[in-house]
Length: 408
Image (tube, rainbow, N blue to C red; front, top):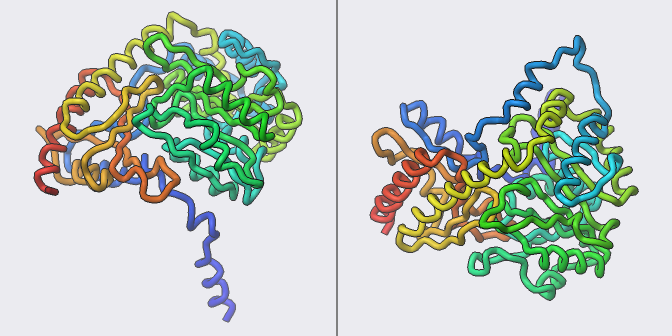
């Protein structure tokens, strides 16, 4: 009898476990692994893992760590690193004090903390869609509902009019969350739109969570406007950030939450204390990159812009494709004349190659919260060098041509 009861209990998973979304970025990896096991080379444009070398000062910091004990650090992050971040943000025109920054275990934890601090179970956060797919997962873990605000390729995925945003605000709305520059769209919000969003949040007593991980990656001379640039928004603005993409250090897992709302930061610290501390050695490695300036970022941005142009121009040669040239980040969201891009990606991995090589993207449906949207879309990450990108896009175009013949 007791054995049967125990068996029944182990079989019952939580509702959040049943509802949490599988990552569209990683869910098709078994097909990529199988393709590689068959001897194929897979150009992985599905994930934002740059091939740019991690800066040498960061690698040197790892190699030079010599403490005899790798001990717990402060829950809010090392003082030396937080002071370094104060200097970094000052160069971005964002004056902050050390106690207005809490270091997190990557940007993922920063977003999760921000969500959980501003909203409770059953509350709502408005997010322009398409959006970074893991926002769905973070919200599910916290019991928060994402209210999607549809943006369109035809308008460059820019924010719609205030009236459309306000139509989504309910008694349970606690915040509006943006990613600027955007993942998966590459959209860069103008200064006017960021300030407009701030005014809207202030009017309705909402927080604004701004994911600014791709701050440096902006093209054609555009500039980045942080939510922390908006005056008078001290109580409302929350910025989340990460070193993963900035320094091509996705494995370093160091991010932060920053806000001038001291009550919010005090609450965030309690979440940080609950998980003890962020990684010590990774903070020291990130600190070594803080002095990097224009000499580091200028050629990096030029490299990504060239990659973007290559991918965009290749897509524009494919009949029926709809996409907007990204203004920032290193992703492009493309709409294809097919019913289901996920099936196309699986076909590329399972059934198509040119000279033993194929390509992988991320299905677009997972970047939406509205059911049924994005099935004909795909995100490509232009994170490979130009030579490999050129080969990948050739395979993509040839594969699409063959796939259309099979499915029409």
